[in-house]
Structure formats: structure tokens, C-alpha cells
Length: 168
Image (cartoon, one colour):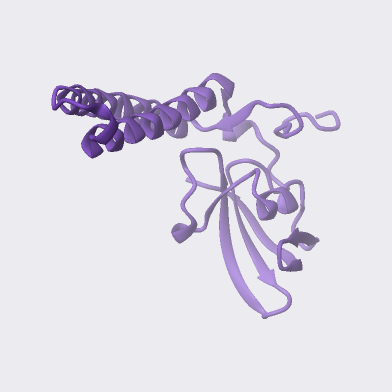
């Protein structure tokens, strides 16, 4: 494998996703479009109530409509930039998209396990972090035994990579 081959390029604007993440994002768009229909009906109903300048229901519905449209636009953008990653083709001995990595926080002497995922699959409560997050970027490409120095808003953290596996 040549240098950089098999590694997800983060420099461009493509968004890596597993098939599961892509399907989840598509379902999100459908749900938001359904919500938009409901909000549009609220706008129409509120409009029928008369004077729009003092119609709080109308203004609230219009604000909701704008927020839902922004969510739809963002999800569609993510889908338009997405590419499906076959995690079985990624390097086995280094942290990559789809990896589960066990680290040692060297400051607190605590072990953590992170799974590096794409948009739509992140879940901080389950330690599923984006590859584009500061921690995700700091761990990418590291091998077992290496130390990652990661710049975060509170300073620099040091993680030692203990184990690397492919996430289920």
C-alpha cells in the first residue's frame, strides 16, 4: 500500500460515512421533510388568523420553518459530500476511520475506548466521535504504543494508544 493509500483524506470536503451512517442521514432528511410539511401547515393556518404583524403564532411558525429548512439543507449537503468507506479495506495497524481505539489518558492515568465515525453516527455518550473532531484527528494514523498530542480548547492532551481494532 502506498503512502496515504487506504487512509481517509480529511483535507478535501468529502465526508466519510459507513453505509449505516449514510442510511441514517437519508432517514434524517426524510423525517425533516415530513416535519417541514407540518410546519408549513402551521404557517398557513396562522396566516389565516388575520393581521400578520401582530400574529405571534405566524412568526413562531415561520421561525420554526427556517430552522427546519436549515437542518434539511445541512443534512442534504452532508449526503452530497458523502462517500461510503469500506472499513475492511482500511489499514489494520493504525487508527483510521471506523477504528475502535483504546487509549490511556496520560494525565489522569485513565483508559478510554473511542470509536471513530462519520457524521450521523457520532454519539459522545457512547464514545463514538467524529474523525474530524480534535481527538479524532489527533488519533488518526497512530499505531499501538504511540503517543498522540492533541490540541484541545483547554490545552494539550496526551493519549497513548493501547489497542486498535475495527469497530463492529
